[in-house]
View 1 (cartoon, rainbow, N blue to C red):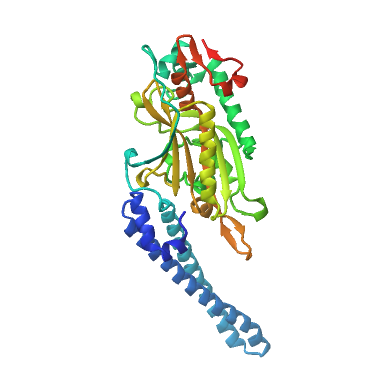
View 2: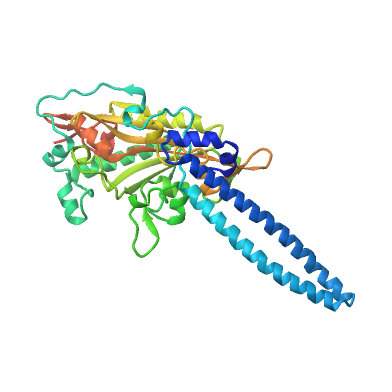
Length: 424
């Protein structure tokens, strides 16, 4: 959530930033925010004055009674009753204005960093780095949805029988490949200084609001019908909420956590070739890294997180590229996002496998996540996260890029976890 002080002091910059993110009616919305804040401030001022008057009169009643001024004391009591009624009306009006202001602020996305390029389409994103040679497959090469059927390692029909579309069943060496990737990602994260967290996969509404999934992505999350619990879309949500309502000691910074969870998303997109197989699922596994930093360190940390994810892809021998998302392609809560895309040889296309983002103070303001600076002042921290990595498209690329006449070759770095070198 954007800070009111920033909106008021940098109104034109905020409107310009929201325009880069293609937020509709930015100027009208920001003007409404300021009007509601002005109203809330005015009501607060009136209430403070009234309560001050009420306290003074209340204190005088005892003195009037001691002096035998009974009629004046009764009149003062009557005045206090009237002032209490007025104060309740003012307090209710102020709470209503505060509630309207907060609800409006929740609908406003984060402001893009100044280095985020203009644009609205994937073509407007900026490619910054590429690694590896794109595999050239021979005749008869298959996309992964045909490979998994050929080698009987993932079963979509069975998943559809048990649950529905977008819930695959991993079998045999397919299941072992999944487990190998999770083990590899977690061990690499531990080497890089991340503390492993195993969080719940259900969150309450307050957690969803704190990290920005609510109200923005309410329709994309599965919700329990009898309780206000949601299945997580990413481990970012429960892990970041560990630090909600916290004042972190500067000695404990930076915070670096990693978590493996199953993730759930209702909106799996329109069905077609671009979302076939593992390209987009309702249930999938992901290892997520979360970091918390001071404002002067967060963008250095973002670069290091990107380097870390790039290192994972290099070890997996997957050709990839890193792109900086344009304003119109940025997520609701993000100030800056880098996507990592691997090349899928069987489909002849790039597949996003990781997003690494800096949210600056946007989530921290909702979370009330702060630290004490050298002057003893509570200051909002910056939150960051990244996929390290999401499994389905990694599996798809491994299967497609490593298919041979003799089977599917397993990247060397995974073989100690799988226990086999080839899927035959």
